[in-house]
Image 1 (tube, rainbow, N blue to C red):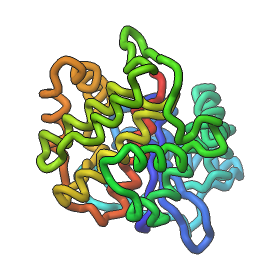
Image 2 (tube, rainbow, N blue to C red):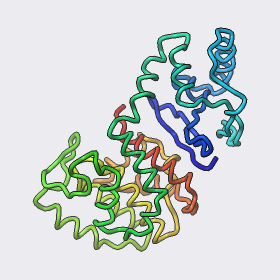
Image 3 (spheres, rainbow, N blue to C red):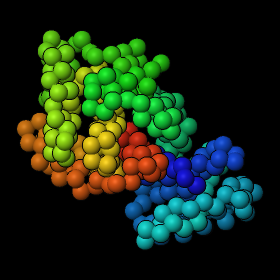
Image 4 (tube, rainbow, N blue to C red):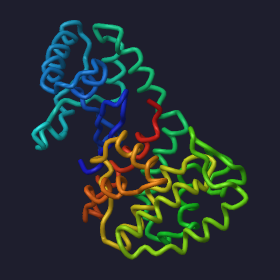
Length: 291
């Protein structure tokens, strides 16, 4: 299985693998238990899943067949076969869970893909697999607009369009609308021949925040394209903690030392590894989820 995905429920990973033969996702049963129980101990969750599977089987609730064992990364870092459930199986499990903690999980599982973020994330997967990124010119404003237009086309009427209103987030006011176009021209001309220069450019683009919504998700893909072209590297976003990243980006407006340290520590030369980019999309969208 080369196509994998990570969803996040209350900051808990729910991993999935794509079944090409049957054209559907299979979700880690142990991850589902960890998410519902909000449990750190992987072994406890694995044992609880074994108990739960047996209990439901006695109640004639069929969840697992012999054909849905897929490999997931175990705590020791090795790929090990484990039980997985398809979407129907996940919903069946949640509906028959021994306590009411599964109701929120079920709502999330059923409806999260129908949100704007859920639909945009699917578009992001398609963009990565389409090969369209190879035709874009990294580091340009047009490239960023093309990425944004693809991710949010049909979801926002401003997809790919530079904003004409001043926006803010928390205590941060982004580039005033009347200066934005000139600022973007300046950012586009910034050098990108070294790691430091590339991150400087990324930070400035974040401060500019050229779109009404969807800036972070678009700009992280844009950043990876620059790294790929200039350094033959990309970011393994799955190794950057959400709170560390958000904190570093806020701090970067005054001092970008922390974000540089975070990004440099997880650069990889696996630029043609589809799983790296897929996980990157998963984490990029996770960063934007409200706590």
